[in-house]
Amino acid sequence: MLPEGVEFIPSHPMAGKEVSGVKNSARVNFADANFIITPTEKNTPRGVEWCRQLAGTLGFARITCLSPEEHDAMIGYVSQLCHAIAVSLMCASDNTHLAEYTGDSFRDLTRIAKINEKMWAELFLWNKENLIAEIDQFDTALQEMKQALLAGDRDHLEEMFRISTRRRTAFDQR
Image (cartoon, rainbow, N blue to C red):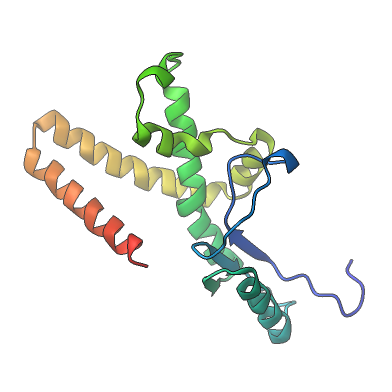
């Protein structure tokens, strides 16, 4: 459908907010954000390099090329699972007094639960196999924690906390 000489280069800037529209616009600093290029067989090396340079010009510090399949698997974990958890947390309890006694952890974890229902339903359904696999993996970890609680296994809980702290520390250093 594109005219001769025009190349569509699939890419995904990993930056955004939970709100949309002109009234929510703001200056964006992409320095801490990732930019993923997902070239297909229709893309030329020249086109992919142009996209890489554009992302660099916009200020993205980390620019990566992934296959569309690798992208979808990764997005199932780092984006869609996070949205699924935030939405599920907000749907788990119809407590109208949350704002009166929650702290930063609840606000941070549920910020993305304010969601564009049409867009995210479509995204979830397009990538449902990857998202279901990630939900299953998350459920396994949550059940492991539940079993440690049921057993009163402080050592296992502490080990899970040490693992999460190490992994988050490594994440923060990148």
